[in-house]
Every structure is written in C-alpha cells, then in structure tokens.
Image 1 (cartoon, rainbow, N blue to C red):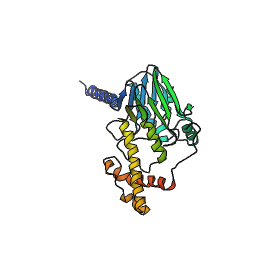
Image 2: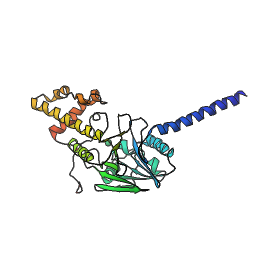
Image 3: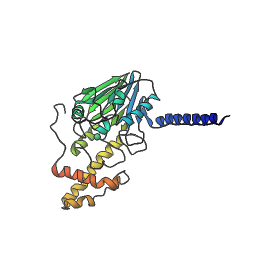
Image 4: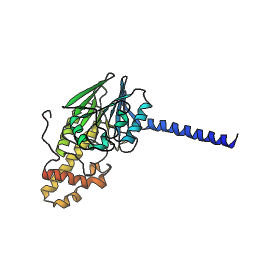
Length: 299
Ligand SMILES: [Zn+2]
C-alpha cells in the first residue's frame, strides 16, 4: 500500500471513530424520564427537557446557542420529528438564550407574557424573542397525544416562572426553583425568598414522580419530589438559624460566621456559599421580601 493511501486509511478511520464517539456522546448526555420524555445535560451546568411525540418535539429551555445545537443533535439521534415548540421557563438570559437554533428549523418559542415583556426590554446577543406568549396561571400544550401543562408559579424567581408538567407521565421540568444537592446559588440572584417557599409548597402539591432539573449536582438531571422538599427545608432551616441569632442579639456582621447547617454540609457550595446565602436570607428577614411587585389579577 502506498504511504499516501495508508495515511488516508488511518485518517478515515480516525474520522469515523470521532463521528461515532460524537454520536455516542450525544446519547450519553441524554436520560429518559418516561415514555418519550428526556433530559439533555452535556455536563456544562445546564439541562434541558425534550418530549418526543408523533407530531413533533417540544423542548423546555434552550440556555444558549452552543447548548441548543448540542440539544438539537441529541434529539436527532432519537427521532426524525421536527422540534415544533420551545417552552421557556422564565425570562433570564442563561435559560432563554439560543432559541434561534430551533426557530431556524421552524419551531415556535413560547413564554409567559411577563417573561416576554422583560426579554423585550432587555436584549442580549444570544436571546431571540419568543413567537408566542401566554398569560394567566395555566396553559395546556397538546401535541401528538401528549399533554404538557404549563403552570405559572407567580413571584418566586425571575419573571413568568413556568413549571412544565406531564400529568400522564407524572414528570415535571423545574428550572432554578430546585437544584438538587447544592445550597442556594451564590448571592441567590432574583429570588423573593418568601414567595420561593410558597412556590415550593405549590410544587409539593403537584402530582409527579420524577422531575428534570435545569441545574443539578446529583448523578443525573432527573430527580424526585424529595429534592423539592429538601430545598424548602434548607430555606426554612436557614431562616430558623438566622432567627435564633437575632434572638440571641448577635451582631449583624457576626451572624454569618456563627451559622452551621450540618444536614447540608455534603451539598455543593456549602463551604463557599453558605455565608452568601445567610446574608441574602438575613436581608430578606431584615428589610422584608424583595424583589416584589403587586400581584396580577390571576395570581
Ligand atoms: Zn433564573
């Protein structure tokens, strides 16, 4: 064999191996939650849900263009159906970015009217405006015999916070309100703590066995109701510990250094962020809940 041919054979083999490993990789990043319901998580801190039906695919949260391209590839390894809808969980750039990847192949992007209003006022280079908005507390998306209930969670985190629930499959997609195995994220951005606890109690009354979480530090992005309960307990334990320090008359600046919550010490961020969590929750208890706005008529 000529040296040149040999090189081509080796290169061809290498390319094939790379292509195959790319396919395996795409499937490796996918977890099945129920019949036709999957989570995609490439290990870069963000997970999306997708639902495959006989009439097309529905995607929840697109994050950014890079994530969205990987997600589209992963979907294509499982079905030839086009993505028909993208449901955005809330307004934030890090969740709603990248949806143009799906709009370009014909998908309609849907967001709650509150999220849309914010996105319109706060453009970002990787954010494409939704094609359709919805209002009120509830909208049902029915496609190919599958029902996806969109539940508006009210003030809690960000704007237009939407939890998607598949009632038949008993699977939910929950963004930001619950992040398994982690304390609150850094300075707890854009959460109203009181309303967050209320929203978690609403989730606890919903009927699901499995939940896909947009962020998770568990082994897979698919968790259970227990993650919701533990999140509420962490907030309440933190509030309790802060209140105990208030009652003891501990100086404001000494409180964070005094608080230990051993039950959660194995959670990601415990050593780095617990004191930031304390300050955020303490300010909420000192000043009153924020951010806040008058409720809509439908809340
Ligand atoms: Zn967010």
